[in-house]
Picture (cartoon, rainbow over the protein chains, first blue to last red):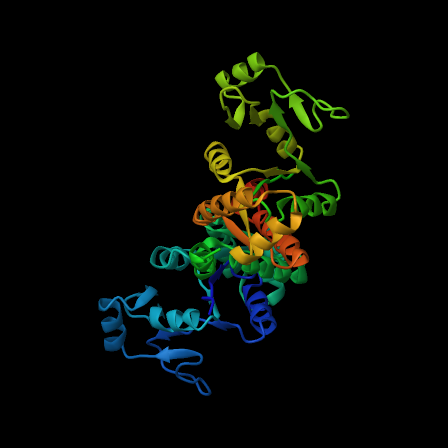
Length: 205
Length: 205
């Protein structure tokens, strides 16, 4: 059984991460799953523990931090907390499933620290003007919020060099294809071919 | 103009490097060229300076070593010498062409030292038994030479972990496709998107 790949996808708000992630998952034929986060917020109607989130108490969240059970977590005093439990990811990877993790740049780098074989991909807009257009077309936010998001985007994009791959989401289908190629190429690295390599070297001839 | 990729392909004798390399070049539509080596051996009939090899004198070869003009070279006393001139590779990369370099594991690692952005791919046989079968089917070598090549193969393959990618040449078309995917994925790394990234970050919005 070949181990799966932990595939981190980051990118500024409005770039199309959700759409690309959904397409990758749906196109994977069940070999890719979304990472399930733990959160201290209450479940909303229809949300299922272990599907949308692992719903945990503040005390349990705290215990998980202490026990080193998170690949990354975010704790802001007085707010709901979120974290990526290592165990769920590990179990899926060991089963040979790829795990998709949609996370911001700080979270991404934290995960790479804890799991160096993870592959981090930055989804970038073709231009800042186009990103502005996409945020404005959503029509869900005030102008001030859009300006703030654009400033945040720039600061995120300036850390592109810390990622393993950069895919520009200009044409959606091209971006999805490129993400798939990256994933396939990552399965051809020595780390993911360990078992084959060691069998080959130990083979009598 | 996007810089090309220096694509190193290594693999044991008999694995099919020549066939895969030829297919990559021919399928590239002229965007990939073979690296042209320098050699101190005399040209054979039909060989053209700058096409098959750069034919240089022993003195010139020596001067090129001293001047640091090789990405790697091999010098065996009393034999013909071979080396990879940095300038040809650099010129092609700057023109946006990918450069294919077919070289052994020591040469490959030397090139990566001198050019860290180079991508090194190991072409591996599906099994040692299959490698033996391929060497025997060539019918060009004595049994003793075949045994020696198999022992060499094992020692080369044991260094697979030093490569960026491993492609198994079981089915030829699959192997070629996988090499292409690797190459395309490598064009999606931050190092190869530098100009785009810096334009994006400097864009007014």
